[in-house]
Length: 136
Image (cartoon, rainbow, N blue to C red; front, side, top):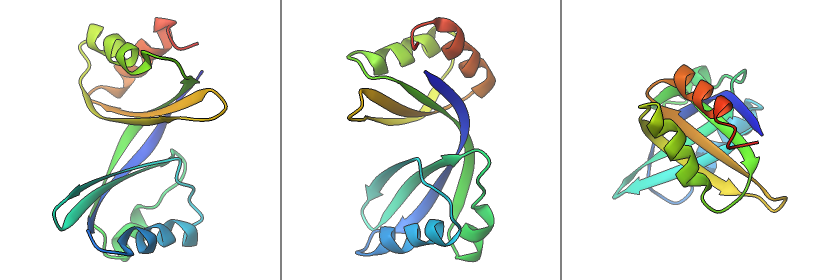
């Protein structure tokens, strides 16, 4: 298991062909690796959530390029993939009264899965996930 604090940028994009490509080129120019991505499209606009390592900074480049964004601390949980994992993450946080505001993830071919979790109390959530013993 690996658990760490990362940065998530929520960025507003116009929903049109090439918008994501042009946006992602900014990360290439800044040499910032995207470790997770999620997009929610609503009509003519989209919210793209980009997760990067905590020590990587892209705020200045987003602002300079004219993007409106919100930076949030998030939890990155890399664990062995298994049925019920989403339920177990939710249950551990629920027992501590922690609200999940955003969650997305994916299983990988090596049997691991990565989850990005944004919560109302990151310190309490980190402690709850680490001490639960459910994700080793």
